[in-house]
Length: 483
Image: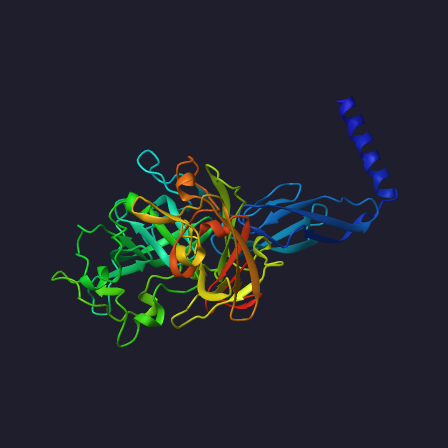
């Protein structure tokens, strides 16, 4: 009992002394903060730092808070995963005086880089593809999590729209209907054939970018239903490339070309092109029908909330003779993020309408020809043997250039803006290349009378921009190409 009283007396004495002594009068007067980067991509890290000001021996520590993603006690922000731009607010609050705080805003953009692979293709055990650049694409039933990721989809800067083989697609995508309420089908003609099949709706995700409820084409074989109209198949001597994976050489086509739709105003008027068909149960219309732009298969890039004005495709250089595989990048947007700035690229504008829509002028041996950049073509297709003086040979029923020794050539590309650029390229013997065991070639070429199709071989060792029509970029309005 005595000890307890003594203890209390001592404690009271200590408290009394504390009340009568002097204080350090520490005060926090404010907090300032900043983050290293003001714009980052989905899932990336950003270091934020705070400074506490005050008087006396004040506490300099803060607590961190973020409106999205997460942040460590040391201020390291982990951005949220997003498919559209998101503003994230980071707050640092003084631990000594919680009324003092500071904020910074970080813009989080979706990841816009999709890896690209040039390899032996989707079914190397049964057939080998050559000079085809592939990506993976995820499609979902609109507004749901019922999704499928499809690999080996061909990257094609020469067309617009996503097209997937029905034999690969396992999702029940809803049918797109024409204005009459009947199912809408499409015929799209390429240089070497055509594809046919219904237009459906899908949510499309590629890396961090998303296009919601977007028309896509489901490619069906010749024996599928509905049957191919004669006005479709008669537009080309080539086959239905949708008959199989081997016929297409891919599981689908990702068209990221110069135009917003695959047909545009040519399919909206009174005499529409034979592209879209109304296909009721009684059979498809015999000729193309008018379809509003919003119902047409669009370039999916235009449906993104950001990075929607074009793409850039980067592939490293390939030596003479080729290599077994190449890895590159498809980056969405032109001048929208730090990884798609144009820097010193030369801009070549192209017409957005008329017979030469999308074409450059390519001059070879003093003669001007229409030319276009087309990553979906697996060779450099140009002119003919009589014009170029290069020997040809027949491989698998197709003509290819087969010089006895490498042919070193020069052409000049020019845009409608007058910008010119020399292209030095080499053509090697196709028979030798195709029997080498390699699949990526910068020197594979074939005849295409009267024009230049700068296929995938042109893209190696370059960063090539494709700016979409009527979309604004730092270099002006599309359409244009730049490299």
